[in-house]
Image (cartoon, rainbow, N blue to C red; front, top):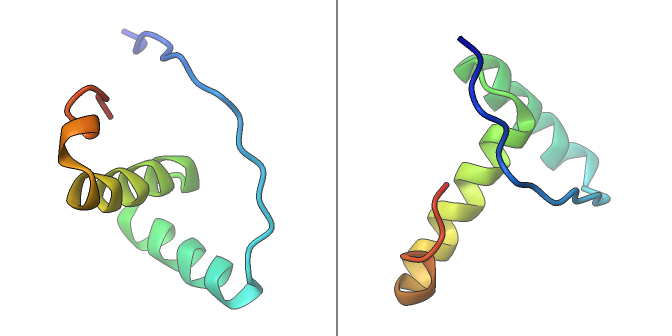
Length: 59
């Protein structure tokens, strides 16, 4: 059964090539998409720095 589609907004960025390579290696090792990894990494960072607002966001 397919997962329900979540509401999203596109984000396009330019990233340092070395950082991109590290991200790609991480995603390949963990079996995650770059989108999934970036959502989790940003979500974790923001939750550590802004607990109250993040309680309202589900990732």
